[in-house]
Image (cartoon, rainbow, N blue to C red):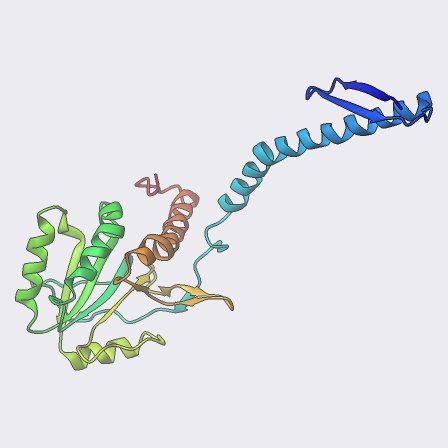
Length: 257
């Protein structure tokens, strides 16, 4: 009984001991066996290289080709109504026309729910508020003006609040206006909601409208939803706008970093 020692020179050195048990192996057998072992080792090395270098590139190209699989963000409701004669703290009118608007409804309990505004301010507003064609508009009930002043003063300590706009109307007017937005969600008894909505420059309310997922608004009570779903969808709107500016050779501001 003997052993046959084979040294493989494939870059990964291995020594094989084959127990012969008196059997004579032909040169052809050894050559085929050696080639098969070397091929297997080579394939393993190539597989490792593929996983380490090729797959990350493929993954990057896949995810970079679009955000959430959308080339554009679907329209939930086309051409929603404007605010009419509703006015801000400074007695100024605010319009949705020709502005990208983050629209919210603070209702009568806006001071109680001010944490939602701080979430939105931190996750979205502070990053994009310098874009001149963007505005954040909160619809509040008459009588909450002093509460809004307190919120604005608190935000002003660490934020440029120039793009925050609060307009005021009666509960009945707010509910009537909201009913024209064509949304599935409902306002609370205080004429408010923790959801905010994306409205484009043509005054169409945008969101997700696929069979797999429907999303008309983004819950400001949950910071993670603002950082993920809303930020992704908001970027799509900005990409659309940047593409339109580039097409018309009228780019005035770099939107995305």
